[in-house]
Image (cartoon, rainbow, N blue to C red; front, side, top):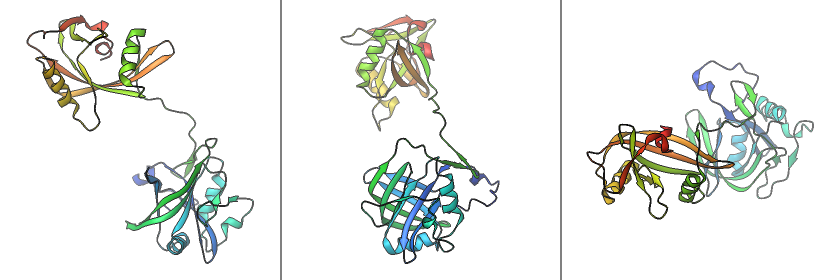
Length: 300
């Protein structure tokens, strides 16, 4: 969205979105130009495609239409002045990039449009698609050269004000202290994945819960499977139970447990999709175990 930052921000719900801010550079018959844009997003990893949304008829639109290229310069928290000038003036009013006490440009590597120094990301793009979307036009560029500066923090824009990423919000996970044996068991199953995703069934009877022993390790847990991408987790769980001879009726409504297993300074993150189950009798190879002794059941 073209940003005229001096305007009064309406109280409409659509104004409550939070966005980053980028400066779009382009070139044309009047030289190089820069504008500020909120609606900028990466839409593909391979190839790297970046979509920008701007008003038709702007100087930037005219420039990109002729040259088929543009620069995406993701603003850092140090660049509120640059963003205000880029968004507060039109290219027809002033040659913004010649304001030397505001903008510092750098030479491009793969295109002919200059880039802005001091940004978190600089992406040189070749236009691959143009399409009208509502009251804006979507321009999709393929990044032919991209670099980042990990010492810079991106600028955030919300309701006419700027913000920074002051702190990281940790995921809402329950931390459970476990034995070294338990941590090693689940870490081995994760194959070094950051998060181990599983689906299991809880079969309770009185103060006990049904558990099984895993082959080789003899480790005791509730029956569970490791999730597979794109596969229905309940169906996979039922298939596993049938193959192993467990006569368990699995309910349809799951609960989610997001855990961090910790032993001293070592951790393993687990997402457990859990289904309640019923069994008329204890299946062969299973046993009852006090609920408080099972790390997964005890976290429910």
